[in-house]
Length: 154
Ligand SMILES: [Fe+2]
Ligand SMILES: [Fe+2]
Image 1 (cartoon, rainbow, N blue to C red):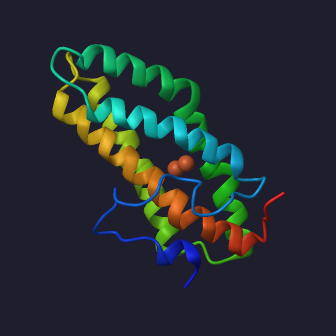
Image 2: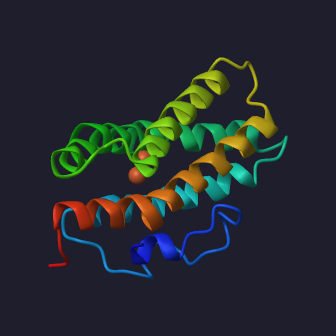
Image 3: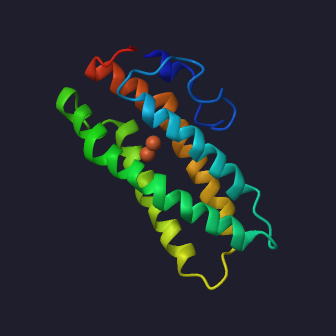
């Protein structure tokens, strides 16, 4: 069991420390972790959405998604996970889960985008998924990638 796995409790996904505290990031993954901090802020905004603020929350999120979120997902899929697959078996539950969450988050964004008015519960649910996803990557996936690839702290 790695240090990342020991701290992770899937029954309490929101209970742990914020990303980056438990373990220093390798140089290769540090930019992704910095973007995760911003993603967590966006997740909080989504989870706080109310009827009156739904439009503004959605517009803010879409700006983040187009500028940072979508390219971040693409780079994880195109660079990080292939790097892991060169070093270890990508049929690992943590890798599969991350990919599934990418699909689910993209599907939810597309669904809200088709709504005439963003539905508050859908915004909050998207925020919860985004939060869960980032915490999974920070606590489980990134330590797994660092251990497999040998990427180390600078
Ligand atoms: Fe991701
Ligand atoms: Fe990520």
